[in-house]
Amino acid sequence: MNIEEIKFGEDGLVPAIVQDARSKTVLTLAYMNKESLKLTLEKGETVFYSRSRQELWHKGQTSGNTQKVASLHYDCDQDALLVQVIPTGPACHTGSYSCFSDSLTETSVKIESHRYQILDKLQEVLAERKTLLPEGSYTSQLFQEGVDRIAKKIGEEAGEVIIAAKNDDPQELSMESADLLFHLLLLLTDRGVTLDQVFEVLEERHQ
Image (tube, rainbow, N blue to C red; front, top):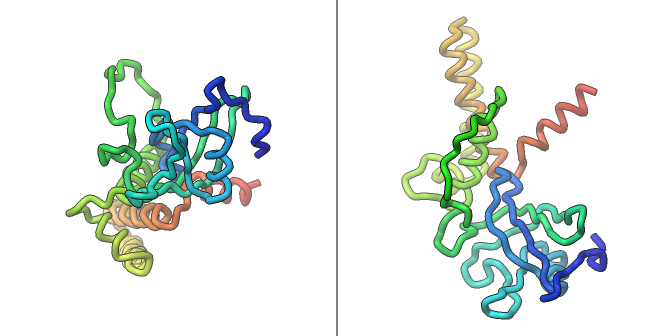
């Protein structure tokens, strides 16, 4: 990225849309000036400019809710940024996963779903659980126990899939396969790998 190509406004700022790289959920809209953008690229974590406090703001410096930068793009007009991040903790000062949790309208337009939309939805939920770690959540417990526990769980579920297949029971095989896919998604989320990355590998191999 050539910072000199960015078109900062008359106030010296450019809007930055912050998106969870895993779930694609928009987390917040913030602003950067040239200095905060340089610091973001140098640190690998988001640094914004607070319009209310009139100062630089390293996200999570005091709260610990940092945002590791996965990618940073600017739009075709070069006057807006898209920052994809791996968040540690909530993005919103209210403690919510995203600042965009309230709605002014109810969806009235039917959105055509694709066959595997549930996988996107699951990764969105898992990314939120990984970020917030709500108490009493099964997934939160696995995230806290770490990759070894999650990997062991995948091994257990894979074994149950094999047993179901040997039993020649389609219903049992469907249920055990769902459990295996869920825990695989959980592992991918824990390691910061997106479904898009997995699909890209499959597409490359197919070609």
